[in-house]
Length: 404
Length: 229
Ligand SMILES: Nc1ncnc2c1ncn2[C@@H]1O[C@H](COP(=O)(O)OP(=O)(O)OP(=O)(O)O)[C@@H](O)[C@H]1O
Ligand SMILES: [Mg+2]
Image (cartoon, rainbow over all chains, first blue to last red; front, side):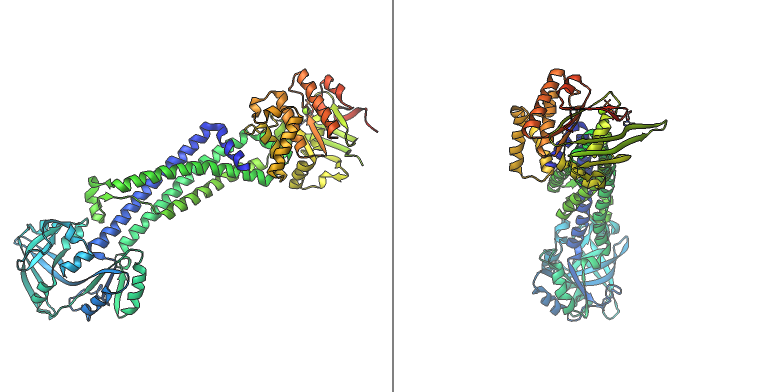
């Protein structure tokens, strides 16, 4: 009955209540959508980075990331590659032979990283094959095929089927030169990546290096992002002599940006709710002031202070939650809509690509964010209610009843 | 043991200009089942006296005893609880919660007392029938006339099974015919439920209906006519 009284009281001044409900709803709607876009952006950065080259977990020889010389290959790399393949939760693995090199065209030179792969293996781990804008992904049978990024091609003034010369140190320190035929040109969201990574088949690389088969990096894709920690927990002790790292450790800046998006959303939410706090307090103060006489009568006939306080608190929470739910519903619906259609940010494409995020964003907001938001609204409402409820509790019935 | 006993009761308002002795050394005993009118000219202290008896205001001197209990000993929330269980209130106007129906208004006080829904329903309907509003239980105050609203207020005052009902000028906003019929009702309830009524008025037609008339002047009792003692 008190709840129904509180609810009915809200609608005594329809216009005033609707204004605050609308303000709450619109504030939250904007905030949720903005948050979802940020989160979608962060997620997109993570996803594209994982799909492009990071994968979920990587194994290197200890110290390789600091000193990426060709001699720092993984001992027994191929045996370990095979073993990791059969660990529960692992979807695919790819062994990579990495060689620092200088790429030269008739007009220019540029430092690159040669990534030696087995195409069939690599396709299951990363999606470079899907990013080809010209040519193919090692399906032809020419000699020394190479796949390079669009950015590098532009820098060096090269086209599909052009010849590119790479110079790199061999295992013994000797300098090797070799010419490659560009069979494919790829383009990812990250121009930084595109200009510095060239792909070739391991067999070609080993022949040119006159080396036994070696790999420097094992890239592992897990069945799902959620299972990654479990797989990591198995790999870490098993290969304690090697460096087993998750993508978050390998690319802390990507992990940080993605996490920062969530923090931004919460900060933005906090600001919006803080502003709403004053609106709600004001609305409820007016509501209490208008009803001084009525509240005085209630106190006179025997409604205790705790109940009066609870009634005003409940009224405030109902008012805020109504706006909050409206905001969450329209926010949720528009997020669902945009996450379905995607938001095309190609107008901002060049700056977005530098950050390595896709230009078609799919905004999303995790469920716990909605729950946290609901809790935050209730807390905001409760804080807003304190002053009005305090006023209501301190009404002197004898004085209130004399006011007409 | 009198139901209500006022001993040397005083209330002085310290206004900036000069102190106002709104109630000045009042001694009064009211027994169970009495039907008492507090009368006097405007400003004589009727409202102040009723507020002191009802524990809505604190005296500046003397004491109010209800069934030998000094209500000054009650803490703020105990006093509210005391009012809830022992006193029924009817005010001059705007007694009711506007968003509630007549029945809900009567029920609400019983809800505060923690009475079960079925009993609340039964009692609210019984009382609204007793005040002649059996047909209007689902009407909002705004849909009722002033007289009907005061009847609902009387029904609410009785709903908590109080020891007595305090009514400050319950007929002030009513025309004389309606005022008379509200008095009829109160008199009937006084008889049927043996309910003690203390009400203030300055309407001569209402004064006539009281069994006992206490006349105030400048906050002091000038006459006390028709009492049992
Ligand atoms: N809060 C207050 N502060 C100062 N003086 C007050 C206050 N309340 C009442 N008074 C004064 O106390 C005196 C008694 O007032 P009270 O309202 O009790 O009279 P009343 O008999 O009920 O009058 P009425 O018939 O007009 O309702 C008046 O002189 C009034 O001005
Ligand atoms: Mg008065």
